[in-house]
Amino acid sequence: MSELKKRIVVVEDERDILELINLILTRAGYEVYLCDNGRNALDLIKKVRPHLVVLDVMLPGMDGKAIVAAMAADEDLQTTSVMITSALEESAKIFSGNPLVKDFCFKPFRTSVLLEKVKKIMGDA
Image (cartoon, rainbow, N blue to C red):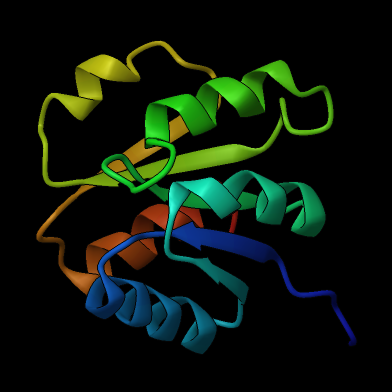
């Protein structure tokens, strides 16, 4: 069975967290693409066409809110799922009701919780 791996783009400016999420998701069998700033995130998302974007809110260049807004305005990205990772509880209010945002994983998170949420969004739970 040569099933294509599901693609995930992770946008996170803290290197340690980026590497940790990469490790968790790669081990779970996902094809993971990494971006450490908001400036390049949209280009990467457009290129990769991921099934899911794991997105930090506070980013250099372009914040998570602007990235989600740009995705919503792009016909090719309007159906792409997003999971917000943030240390700010207010993020839930900012993205409340946004159809692209499927879940939140607040920092600091437990790796098992992050993976569980990703699998649920991806339909692998």
